[in-house]
Length: 569
Image (cartoon, rainbow, N blue to C red; front, side):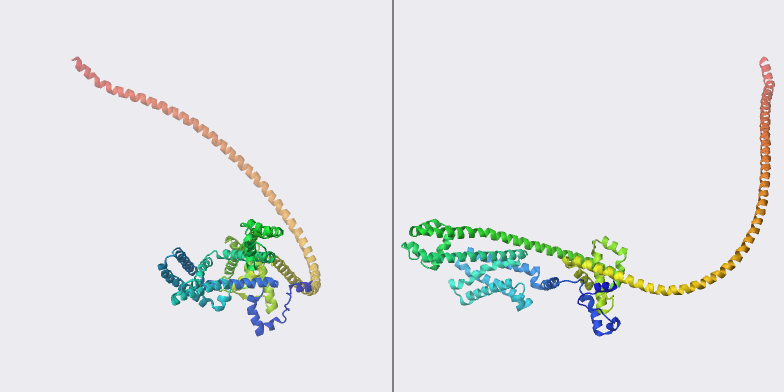
């Protein structure tokens, strides 16, 4: 089982490291240790997936380089679009006033100014991009178009200003001015969709034009050989040679007044009805019905491309969210803000519940994110063990994010990588447990032998202790019997004391009851005496009041007698 687990943990194409301590001391070992973190792949991938990752990184780098150019800024693009719109308006005004000969020098001067501006734009782009990138880069078709239109404008301006030529020969280059309007689509923001539609339309139209040209060419050869020498001069003139026949057949394909032309031919050659039937059906009906079919195909193709773009945009959005989560995760682990963390430090931090709740509170993690990070770190530690002989190394934020993103980049292989790495993780844990159990078993065997010897000595000591304990037990039993007798005597004495205390308590209770009864009787007698005293006091008070009244009456009577006597006198 250990051999099978070791085989599972071994990555194909990489030999296991031997004598890791000596390997680390070598210069190449230290160099591989320094580059292992940034260069090791997070999971086994096929060549196509690796190529897609490389192309995505190159596209992002190219996009960043383009964004750094001043000619690719929104201000410059808006300025270019404004110049093109102004030039288009001048061309329209010139076309509206083309009969005014006196205004032509003014328009030529204005056109020369716009030509100078276009030349400055081309020179600036050539200076920023370089000749090779300008003419053979990713956007070389539009660059060639701009260069050719600007060159035609320069030739036209030089011809008009310096040579002062007139007529149709000098005005041929002026026709290229109209094509400058097409540059407006390149400056617009919706150019991506317009460009795709234009390319698809041009391809479909080219296919249709090829079929139409082939049908017209073959039909012209047939009718030229059949009708070049007929008796009707009008018919013979219409099909006199290949060029004339092709023009006549093309006019017939438009189905404009074709019946009158066919009647002239049928009057001379009645058997030509077979040709006209086949030609009208093939060229006039079948080919024209291809036009809506082609545009339907263009629409379906554009929808498929739109779906692919939406899927790519959604994938980029998911990557941005994952990168934000990983950056936040790295900042949480990097507690000292040194910019470097080790794999062991990350694994220890990921085992904390508080960190998981913190990420969930910030809404930066979803199901499977932390598991993928743990699996990626385990995979990296195993790769480092095979590469450098150590399972731990420090990495910066960019290396950490790139490694985890590389492990989760391809959705088709993500489940396979996740299950395989999880299986390797479990196997590594089982191997660690088996190794530790084996070591513990070997140490346990030695401990058993020592334990047996110790047990034998302990048994002998226990036998001696048992003998001594038996004597101690006998003496303890005797002491227990004596203690029991003493306890029984003390218990009997305590019982007697309790009975005597109960008797004394009963006597004291009876005495207290008797005293309480005497107090009650005394209280009743006192109440009766108090009532008698109150009655006597009330009687005495009444008698005193009567005596007081009598005394008052006796004191008033002697004073009133002399007054009566005075009245009688």
